[in-house]
Image 1 (cartoon, helix red, strand yellow):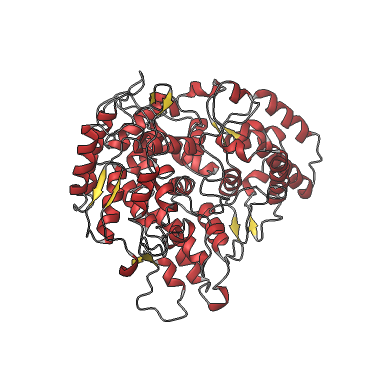
Image 2: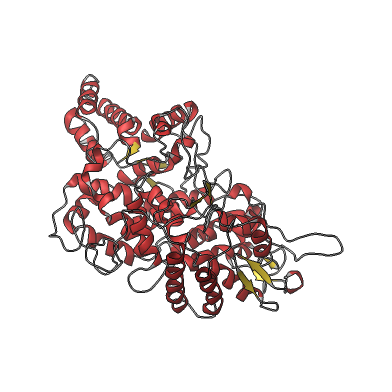
Length: 588
């Protein structure tokens, strides 16, 4: 920080060290109170301030989710229309079928959310890799099976909300197979994604601990095998993870107000940390390495599916200081790691920093300050004294009045560009795609010229496929100072590559043995208007303009439609055209 911490902030961080010895969830409740105090000490906020968690009128209140389009407790429930259900599912899942839309319309938002939150993790990637025998010696130095397991889970898991959140978390707390140079790297990344699945509705503090001890992150951010300083050689602990843990996973680069706007002092942003803080925190992440206890050489895939363990001779036992926190000399490695994470967790930046990014991944690229502040307040306190409750945060994001406001459909500055992976999985889930041989051999879709230009757990850097603050240059968004994160993936190659790839995928080509179930859709192919109407709902949530609907109907009506093959071609064309339309690609 450019300025020293206030006495209130110092007290919060010091007390956090004492709270570190409490078990979760008791530790979470204690840290929640400390975080609220630190947030108050930071001051600021927008004029559109959040309502108090747990009070009527706050859609983030975990005990009263409401029901109906607004889901605002205290207002009468209103039945959902099919278009409203489809729009909600576009935000809350990676893709929904006609049956999914009917189910939500019948049940209402509250019941659907409660059922999704209650679902256990349905498909663990590690289990599938073992079941397919991919732990055999021949796969030791390959990535074989990782993409397969991911596509299977993303496309078919019944816990659809969990998958949407887990994928979002994978783009905030990034680990990529491209940066994991180890044996059985497919197991390392599968284990990592299983952690994200497990904690998608859990506590963010526990998520931080589990990813910090995961082999994938240890390799990716280069602190596996990290050693304490050596006075003889002058070597220092690797600082990579300490830096990214602060910059990307917790507090960001600049101090934030409760609404996510930066704190400014004398015309300059106030930084959250300095190089000395990175150096001090890096001392915490020394001595960690793979846990091979009880395993025989050559070590099997199991070494990648365990939390890392300590090598005492490499651990820095001296005092560690960062962000006003001191971890005393002699503190054992796990206790030091937990105290460090606790100190970061109570930082006032964490609620707005993480909440805003989750809103961007699920709902809109440019949420209002009020929207961010309301969700951040739920992150800071779920209404029951717990900080970092992702279940409460996700509920608050999806049920916020801004997310549910139908008036936003007419707001040109609201919404988000659907990620290429999201568009592909949406098609696959909407039409019940399955792998006929259970191979799920869709493969790596990273090639921008012939595929999607994006593939899960294959980010080119720790900064994700796109930055949350990316502003597309020379655009209307840039002129208004608005961000468009996913536009960082959008260029001439990716636009053409996406359309060509989806045209083949829709027709059952280029995606291995993945095949969609078009029985219901094919039954409508004889009536172009009915065919477009179905895709208008299932894919576009009713957001194709009348002009687009008319154009599509006319184009499809001009195609032959007498034989089964002709009807199939008409259906394939309709799917491709809708999936390529700007009104679909922009999620409102």
